[in-house]
Image (cartoon, rainbow, N blue to C red; front, side, top):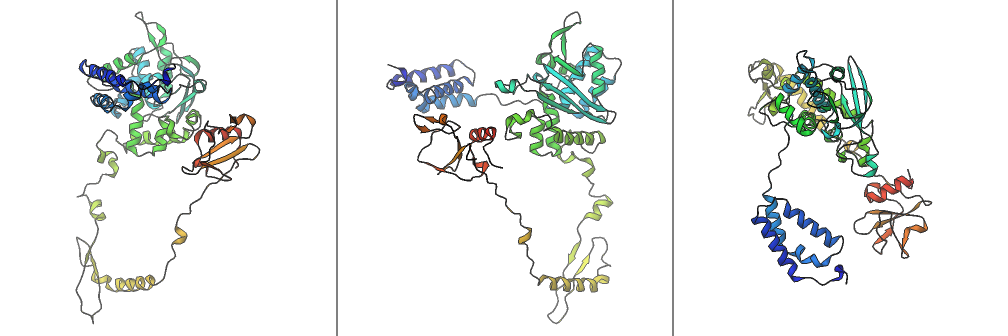
Length: 455
């Protein structure tokens, strides 16, 4: 008899409870219990092994796994580099007294900082494109080997790493990086198909492999001892500055090459998607170089030019005026004197003008103003499926729209099957037109690929 069809085993929960207690008493890692119970759930609900159902239903087993997970260490995120540290690396890059390989390592760190790259993103660069002149520009690095390349399709796509060419010190850094790399026999232009920075052996010769994250961490600690910096600080630095500067979240998602930057996760591989966001990043870096933005300061000091002393003459002029009210009798004409804080002699001179303007305002208030034209108009987007390509069905409760291909291969046991794999039932109704944002993501993807959506 198949294990999936076996009756529930009452001893399974007891055995699981003894195992969880053993994990707790033996000092196992905090995530072991939660990982184990997740695998049990996967076996029950995906593969259908009902024999393990009592384990999933046991509150003491699941609760003990949750209690173990709570003891997990708090998330320790990498600290970003400070502006002074980045400027110090720029000075090292300009120095003639530094070892050539150490200078190339500093050039590697600066490249990672301005391109918001992980260490693993630079372990195998396919090509480097320098679009740079004396005033600035862009540097684009293309790679296939990175953290997000998990599916077979993405492993065949090049991820562009786009960086602005002007640094926080106001200089154009890519030519300096190219010169530092050339001194140790590396290249920073054209087709590479190798690590951006290769490691060296005990004799000082270049190895075929790239530098590891451990070696990068050790070098950063040699440059800036006593800090909590790591190789991931290179990616976090510019993104932290952008958040403090106030760049919009979509721009920051694009700069970080996050999949939620667009509806289609493959869009982050577009070569032109990040240009606008990187231009805004360049403007932020220019503000740092000019001293109008200081990300290392406290929150009230991010923009020094906007912090005004309250006792300064400029701030006094910006202070609001005081309104002096006077109690009057019914047969007297009411007047309002506007008196500034430092001098009240100008109020009497403007009595006539204030009275006249107030009468004008009173008369204008009688006019009814139509503000309906200023209200934003809501635009509803509607589309449909081309009859030659298939049909669309809407779920009566969730209102989610699914797409079925108009072919004989879209049936399973004489039952209609949607493009996403779900089966048609009585809960669905035919949809002649619908909002594309209410469409199943898989069905929408297939419909777009087939060209089934009407414009």
